[in-house]
Amino acid sequence: MDIFGILTLVGGLALFLYGMSVMGAGLEKVSGGKLELLLERLTSNALFAVLLGAGVTAVIQSSSATTVMVVGFVNSGIMKLSQAIGIIMGANIGTTVTSWILSLTGVESSNIWVRLLKPSSFSPVLALIGIILYMSGKNSKKKDAGEILLGFAVLMFGMETMSGAVKPLADVPEFTSMLTLFQNPLLGVVTGAVLTAVIQSSSASVGILQALSATGAFTYASSIPIIMGQNIGTCVTAMLSAIGASKSAKRTAFVHLYFNLIGAAVFMALYFGLDLFIDFGFSGQNIGAAGIALVHSVFNIGTTVVLLPFIHGLEKLAYLTIPLSEEEKVPAEDKEFQILDDRFLMTPGFAIEQCRSLSNQMAELSKECFLKAADVLLGSYSREAAQEVIDLENRIDLYEDKIGVYLTKLSSQNLAYNDSQNVSTLLHCITDMERISDHAVNIVEAAREMHKRKLSFSKKAVEEMFVYTEAVRDILNRAMDAFVNGDEKMALTVEPLEEVIDELDKDVKKRHVKRLRKGKCTIELGLILSGIATNYERVADHCSNIALYLIQGQDTELEAHRYANQLREQDGTQFGKQVEILEDRYRL
Image (cartoon, rainbow, N blue to C red; front, side, top):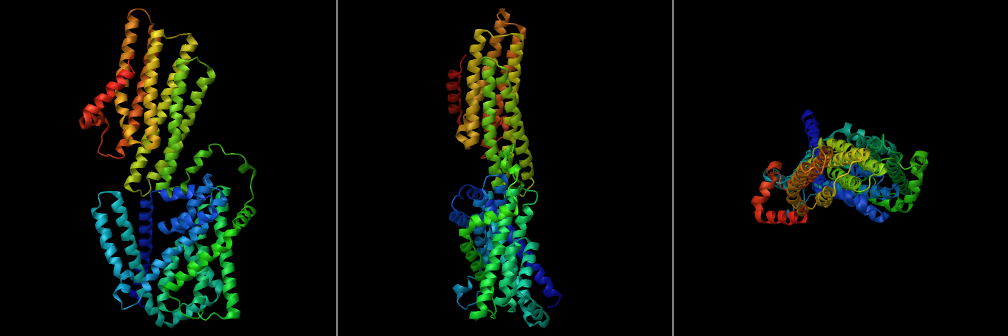
């Protein structure tokens, strides 16, 4: 092989790895975190967990990504170690799909239908379709589909290039003599493990071996140890991911390592042990791409079948390696924030769902914070009740800080358009939720001031504030329910009520001025009432903002200051009717 052959080989390898990366990224965007949510929720049955792990890995084309995700699940406390083991086993099976796809490069036949199965035949067609979708697609789904097809075409082209580049090596004595080193099984295992550890992908590592098999210099006997090593090498990604994680996450990584180590040891012992007595005739035969895919599948499926009944044994082995500490027995403070694991950043769709889950909790806390503050104001004041509101506000501040920092990290990833929109929406919404809790504290401070000075509103002012409170309670319920349920129809009902509350705010303040002129109220009480009313109106404004952000998720051309006008223009009569109904409901 001359320098040009080496350059062709290196270029083919680069295209192969890049194509695999692009295809995997496209598949992940299309899944949008839904597959990862399935992993999280549907793993109570060990066999089902295996099937689910295999299915998810087959779709996203990366057992390493699935395993790292599972390490994150365990680290965040949303999955038990026993549940994770089944998924890890399934991930090893799912990764064999790639090797079978790559084995199509070895298809040889004069039959036109069989030849169409060769990647060199259908990859150009997929590339053409892919580039058309990617360049002309107006929505992210078409672009993502185009990215998948382009990635697959590049991957296959790289595979074909590598195979073509290494074929001349079959006639190079130095190369064939070097391969005799792999007759030593232990050296073959080490080579496979190191190669996979370096490129961080067992699928890519197996693909490289399949390409090299085109030289005809690899036999079953020399390839099997390398394939065993490749399965061990893929554990490195999970082990690295567990650095700095909780002890539970470290145990998960060790389970992955033990599973492949035990599987490789058992498989090697059975194969070479039986070969001594039975003398497998195929051991010395040349192995092709399909043969490598077969060995890869037999190993992973066989290891899973053998070790599946011993899940609890693997779990105990992990606990023996990393014993349970006293700290783990005590529930961690702020445990709910553990789901914001940095490992999930590599799968943005799922990371966004984790943020949404916490944001939903924050929405309920913000609503509760305001309603408690209103009770403190209009009910009988107590220091304990006021402190509850302040404690809630501090808790909500923590939510905003944790979710906001995580979303900022997430925004630096290569996000699909929809994911980027979702991140932006969540960031805006949690800011408004936090501001609602700030206004709740302002209301409590006003109530505390009144209690301290022994001040009280007139009977008429209390009646008006009760009506005002009910209107704000209504808009809070609408906005937060719309946010939690992703209900755009409910979000559209917020703006008419916000308009009614604006008028209600003005009316409350006007009525107070009239009482002040008649000497029925003091200036001091008037200032307090005006401040409370303003806080009420600001809460309604933040509810309107949240509703707007939800609607903007569907209509990115919508602008905040033109929101109400556009609603009237689209259906002025309906908007007006809603305003009239709400005005009657909350009339002073």
